[in-house]
Image: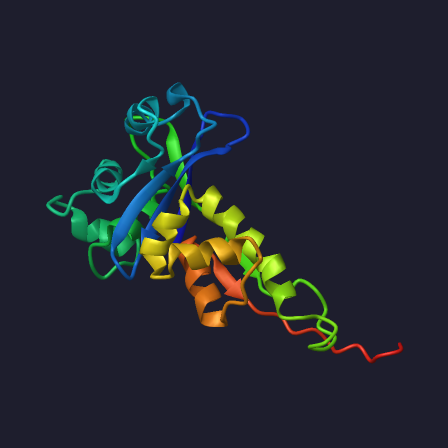
Amino acid sequence: MKCFEIYNANKRKHLPCARLFYDESKDKLHIEVSELAKPTDLPLMFGLFAEKGTYTIPDKWARKWVAERVPPQGRQNLGEILRANSLDSYDEIALLEASAGRSAQDDFLLRRAPEPRIEYALVDFVSEEDVPARSWCAVIGPEIARRRKDAGMTQRELAETTGVEQAAISRIESGKANPTLNTLEALADGVGADLVVKLSNRVAKGS
């Protein structure tokens, strides 16, 4: 999953007003618009959605926004553009990133978002008795919930994306379940994050 931040280059702080997500495995795009942004602070298309209370822009319209910011496949000097960007074939997302999403129509640019990471083990592992399995989910569950909300997803949408039942996601997020690593990895991927497993040195008892 690739994630890009969209921001207004004329704004001093360059805070993102939206995020573009690209699922390479499914060749799907969607845009999550910040609910804190005013419609006037957004690209025109995003503002039209936000005015209606819609903050998730689906693939069809996300592609229209991207298409406005990259050269079309039929462009006469396309070969030169591809070579200049070290591309062997037409790739909208690669071209979008290479140009930072520049467009003569507005002042909005695009940049790769920092890699999101979810730490599986945030506490030192002492022993199975001292640190019961449920403590792991007490750490990771709320973090998954936070990342899901940041991505503008409901539990139902995350369930549809990952194949993990919504009831299971609810238990995991509340820290009341002991999920497998495979399940956690699927949920992390579903919210656009990477699951990172850390092993700490075992602490001797009595030390």
